[in-house]
Length: 370
Image (cartoon, rainbow, N blue to C red; front, side, top):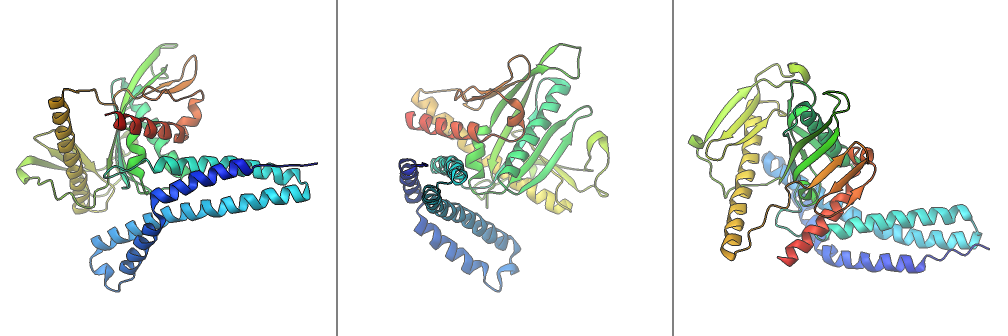
């Protein structure tokens, strides 16, 4: 006789989910959605396209967040019904489906629980990710492209919209750098734990046979800022270069020289954009990213100064944050959290949620200790 008892597991999930709903403040979220919906429905909304884009994007993000909450609530109810049905009908197939749904809900609610830890000033924003190859020649540029694909596949798994803003291809394999935007609620807070230096160790496919090669790539994650009014950039502080976009092997992509590279002379920060159709649009997009980087740099310097005065100088947690071993013992290991996966292929295919969740929890503990 079939006796499927998942009541304790379901009750535990309901308890966790109730805590999540309290932290998220579902009533406040619903009120925000109603307010943004009214703004989005205004007949003159698109008289100001920039404002309209902000309103519709914010509404989409809030609605997505509410949909996740309501969907989980419904799935918990449906799971209880499925368990009852399996027991009444003594149906092993339904019982198996219930067990699988329980495991999936544990994962989904775990993800939501991690999201409640994202309470930083910009954590709820979309993210701009930049990947740059480091030391290691062709292996490094190839590694940078592998990382880019990894994050794009991660976004695809979650159905997050992605816009590639700039790609600089290497003369040999891979890319020198790439910048892309992931437009999803809490994308910045989620992906910010991926920032830092990534290290790849493997038998090089580009060098002598059986020679192990270590290569590096840097990942930078910044929030998409609606406004960066706190940073004033004099024209004398920047150099603007216009160039033609290029694909692999130097192939011309654009028919006009619309790509823009802005160099901030005092800091040496360089931002390139080539995704937009016009030079004016690319310049505006590049300036927004530059303003955000300068704003964050200013705040990091202020925070570092406070730590110095307090006598608690520590190294940046993002440096040398993860190693990927593709020879001998196949392994990907986060050097901060100790979290590891013994199948690098699935990681490079976008299975990053375990690393990200461990990173967010690690960062929260670190912040609490500080």
